[in-house]
Length: 428
Image 1 (cartoon, rainbow, N blue to C red):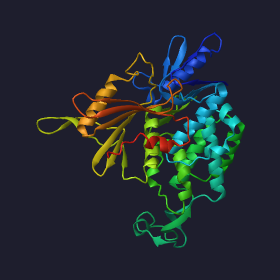
Image 2 (image 1 turned 120 degrees about the vertical axis):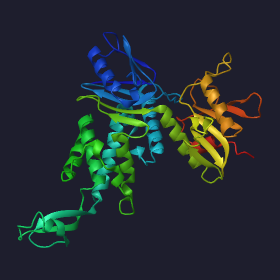
Image 3 (image 1 turned 30 degrees about the vertical axis):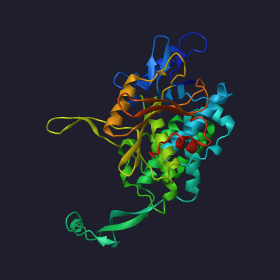
Image 4 (image 1 turned 180 degrees about the vertical axis):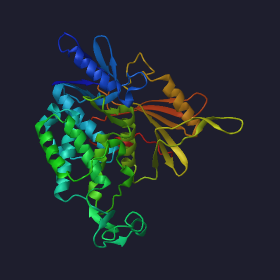
């Protein structure tokens, strides 16, 4: 099995050179990546298939094909760490970001430092899911009363009069019964079984394979339902099954929804991919909600939705959707747009590598939402001087509005809420 790990925007050579993977392996990985919805219309949104190398883009995760797998990790700096140690720390932080964004409580302490370094992101997520599911089943599989229809020699429940005098009109020895029966064959358990089945086909480590086999045996009596036909809408979480909410979120993650996609790229391919721009935005929004929980400010994610233009008959054109609005009542106090990009701190580049389109977008937000505090928030990295926080503040020409650029170090977990609070303008 050929396994390689690279960081986003890095290239993996293929061919005969040192560190290269075989051409056939590169072709298979590229084909699976191109089948992902994140690949875009041209098929290169996940991996660029060049003449001599595969180059990762702004999507992270795992792409697996027959006999080979490529893990793509985000660029997150950890001071004093290199090689496998740094990759282990990145996996740990990525799992933390996923847990926050999807409101999951993941006990990362179940994974040792060595495991973070030697196992891929996919194997770690499979381990966390399977361990948590084993513990949950030991406490009992959830069951619900479900209405059943059957033909019985004695009455059970109530008589289905219509069926009795139509389908069974000539069979007086059988009664058309409708009754409620307590059964584990419900939507929640069908989702768990679907996750077990998918993961069992792709798990690579012996421990993961063993646990999934045991779990598959426990779910033998649960109906097999295709992933596309799973009824997420039928799940109702209450006090009797609330402990399954985290497992449900983890299964949703592994089966593919929201900012990530899980897909098969053919019979022998699989991908679990996350778009870092969207994940970073959701992570920051949720951490800000924690940071401002005791304040009078409200965090609105993907809100606003005002239009830039109106036609003469008042139809809106070019709808806006700022990443994060901080509101006091109905007043927008601050607009924050997150960008998973690396900005520079070079003294010969006053623009810091910031996109001109991003500046125009923020100016439009300031005008539309009548907000004087605008913030472009980027991930902090080792090439920037000093610690994370506000970098520059500029006045927008012809107004008193201020556009600030700032960074946040997602690799440093401690004091995250306090560091985010320091970026907030309270409008006083």
